[in-house]
Image 1 (cartoon, helix red, strand yellow):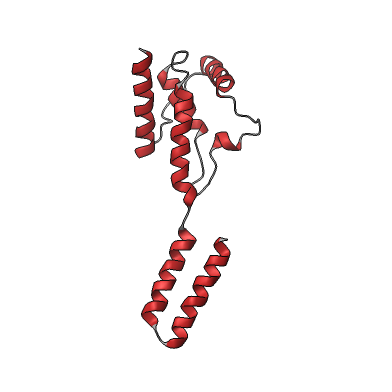
Image 2 (tube, rainbow, N blue to C red):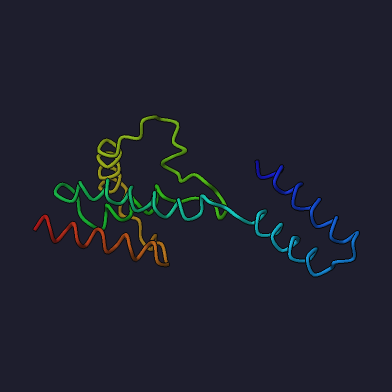
Length: 139
């Protein structure tokens, strides 16, 4: 779909170039760059990170807030332009948060806590707010 749209835009731009209408051709080329750069999954990743945080925060009654945040931080890692996060690429489907958290907790007790593993930026701050709000609810 993206490739077809890209070809159609380039054809339109070439027609304007042939007619000598360079301004219109440039507009279509700018639009072409926008189409090529457009990644609808980028914002979608943020909403999925927040949903995953809400799912993880259901375990605040059982595990420490810091451990849950580290768990979230690890499993929501993705490549710069990647569409999938680590928990979505997991070979073991379905991804069972409860069982994974149990193993995560045991590993932290056995091997020590991960230090300095926090995400920066708006999404990380939003997740911290979710955990703080859920923690306050649980009392």
